[in-house]
Length: 106
Image (tube, rainbow, N blue to C red):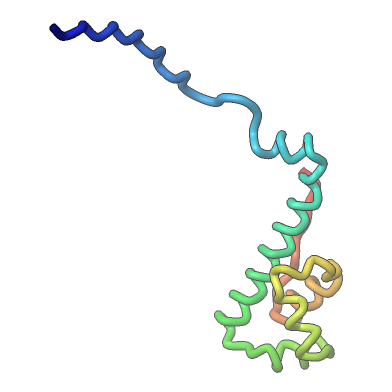
């Protein structure tokens, strides 16, 4: 004789839309938001400088000469993991490529 299986309760539908706070809010709560944001900004600027070098066909040696700096200093500037680069150095690199960096309060 087989036993009847108990009826399973219907699971409620998952809520649609947002659940909980945003990732930005989480980062602010942990105190990491500004550090992560500034690191991301530096990485984006370094990437954009690298892309501009490629589009203009400018080598690292040539850009270093335009900036009147060493190739190793330029390598540090383009290193996405190096967050010790000063904004003035990034601006000099942009200027050497005929570009400028624009920052604004949002």
